[in-house]
Length: 217
Image (cartoon, rainbow, N blue to C red; front, side):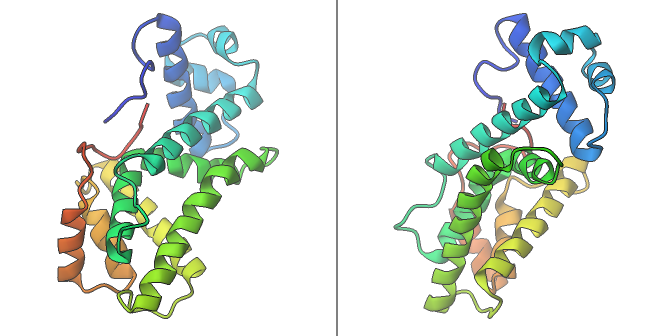
């Protein structure tokens, strides 16, 4: 599990803030009505400590969005992300493998996007380009004949997103182990790639740093 530089290291204030954000994510994504007192208890700090780092509930949610957006942007702009030179199968595999280590962050953005009263613009600024990237890859794959499915790109992209988040949940719960390769294979198969070819492509699209799915802090 990779950690964002500075978080959980160095000064106590930084680690406390990160701990509060981790606790808030676990609670608020599951139950948007969780109180700040519950978040504080889950983080192992006093409620007043939460207010030292966040002015209130809205500020805490904004902090979650910022953390998640930064991690996802970094992953999808990094050296392991797909490039214009990649063929569609490699591009989709690289996209999945690049996103896998920060899958929880991506899931957080999706969950918080549904939260009433949350400004949707910061969330859409991250989710929109990511979803557009997948749709463009699917369109290229369908046009070139390597993705053997007639499902519209937007619909297939949404289905892939839900499928991968479900796989991430299995990995997080310990019912399945994966470094992103299996998830990439699954994505390619869903897009209509033969399973043997999907496994070969996904195995060759390994990221430079092997990680487990989860928090990139």
